[in-house]
Image 1 (tube, rainbow, N blue to C red):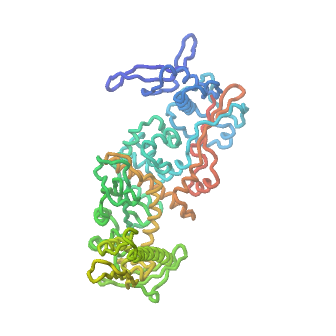
Image 2: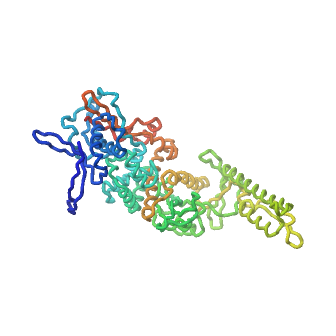
Length: 636
């Protein structure tokens, strides 16, 4: 076989271009016939001096032959040889096992691996006809090789969730063609399996993942621009996709549509991102305020599925985003909105009431009242007793004071640390009154008051509970003494450690129901953390607005399918994080086993490795077959 360079013309435009083919010469009667084994495309960039070595190495790999010169070949030649040999083997006519055919005569033909054409070319050796391959083969053990390892476990689970939700059909309905759908799936699956930048995703799909074999698409031929354009297409159809996926989730899990949870997060840019309109400085939840930020707002159902996403500038104020997100959400009449204190401003609460929403929110009221003798009790999921006391405010809304022993322990520890820090600072100032000025001591009133102000600011949580007196000389120029007395303010958080207050319009519900409604928000924040930490939301490397928002939207889509899998597992008592599940699934690979028979013919078998016990348990629950991609047998 050899490589041939051919100049041809575009049928539409008539423009000339060059294409490359891997060709085999054979004698047919008195004539020499050339057969194309593989079209290498127009972007084949290997220097011509390496073509003979490449053709020879491809033949060796296809026929399972050992080569003494293989180790001396350039890395680029080796990479091309392995890629093209795998494609040639994949395009050969699959040979069923005689034993398997006898045992299961109605068994469907195995799916073709990635790169397989709908049109099957003639065998690479025309003297060999495909036939039944006996289960037992006599092979040279020294010739056995394992090649082409690619990850398949996480891809299989991710694709299963997508197909349950009808994603491929929906994308086709929206007008995406087959390569666009493949690129879209590649973006989302990569975010679930190997979250990284789009550039790294492109390399992962080409070199590491077996996703192409599961969807019958050759990612090695896909350029980076197509992958990025698929991100644009997903973002363009975000409204339709959100509506479709949420509807599918409601149908799959029998969800109601009564409660909406609202949350915001942000991510940071690597670099200045001067060309991104929403890249603004703000408060980073990842302590990366040194970088420009962009904000992602999400409205979720009580089950944790996303109903709507919207993107804001990095300096967006949380309270101002609520109305725009809920407008047109088509929530059921009387739907309940659950939110944290940062969003629950008086203006937002008033607007929610005017729009017919109910709400449950953490109250910003500074004065707390809690009487254990008037409280009812409820058990948390961790068998912790929570005490609840109901109070009605002037508007007839419920103020539910909740006491948690775990939170009390945490509050007391923080209060003790802050009080100790403040008292240490005061003691240092007091001791400095008797020290010489050069020994960090001072009696100057202005200096003392400045240092005292800094201490109060640093330990503000504790400072409000201290009465601090600064005594001066008659002239008022020198400080003579600093004294302090601790008095806990009535109704403050320190007076009622472990107590927080919920404010709600759901006056008809009992205390336990109200508390559990709010707890859904805290539980979902834990689930939602997978989007922020496990699905590549941070950081952002793009510098074009639509690509930035497309990057974030891909993480949102990945979150939907991760949450689908986790809810299915949760129904069977498995509550592991996605990172833990991903590690268990990621151990499975697809590999090709090559064996040379005594008669010189070569058997190639490609299939998935046996799943480990943990993977097998997860696969049983998720109804995943143990051999994703099935088995592909080729006799050359």
